[in-house]
Image (spheres, rainbow, N blue to C red):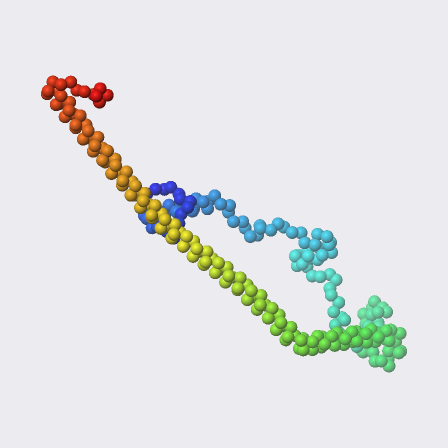
Length: 248
């Protein structure tokens, strides 16, 4: 068995892979080639380290805080999401640092008697108006979603289905091209196989004819040597000198 590598192999024609030992040789060649190939890189090292928010110091500090798991400072003020009635404690706290003794609500009539009662009620009213407007916005958004959201999602789904159909068509076209290419390769290789078989038969015929000519030449040379020997013996018996071909 020859170990010479053929770079113009015809996989649809060549059957050497079925010969004993050929598959083992092929596996060794593949393993040797793969050893020379660069090893696949770790996916974690495919991309270089990126420094996030390098131009924004505030965002870098916030990202560092999140990484360390520290709470946000200062915390978010959630008081604007609450709707509470002003109390006497609020007026006491705003005017003095002492601990308030009463948390009774301030009625609108009593707010006229307290210097800061009216201000607190105005703030509470502004907060209530802001929350009311926020709720109105939410209701409006929900109504818009209820009215137009279904059609918007249908259009989005239609676009996604259209994109999916394009991708499937591209995949089917690629598969069809691969199948057609394999058919062409098989047809070309089978045609090449027929040509190779004809050439191989012609080569074998010419080799056979050459061998026949060589055998005939060897036979004629042997017969010629026998004739020369017979001629020499005959001339010796008759006492006649042997005439060389150049002297005739």
